[in-house]
Amino acid sequence: MSHFSQDNIESLAVSAISAATYLDACDAGAHKVRLDPRYYQACGNVLRQIFSLLDPETNFPILLQQSPAARDVAESLKIGQRIGLSRLGYYPELTVVLNRAAV
Image 1 (tube, one colour):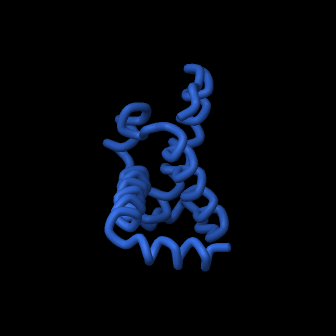
Image 2 (cartoon, rainbow, N blue to C red):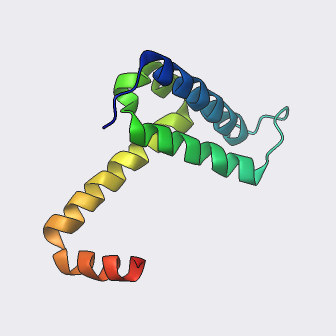
């Protein structure tokens, strides 16, 4: 994992909070928020990328407490990691086939 300065982490936190706020507002059916499917997807991707770089439980605990979208993204990344480890350990043949298909 890369080392980030506190300024870097704070900048990423602002982006994560903005993305999570939009996702939560759309998911809650807020009438004052215009749903833009591409922007919604981009916000999800931003959260996923930030949480892939920095452990969300360590760096963004308040965001995880307050945002269902942030919790969902963090949980999905954990599940993906567990599946990846299980696939390598328990299904090596499947791993080879999936790696071939990905190329």
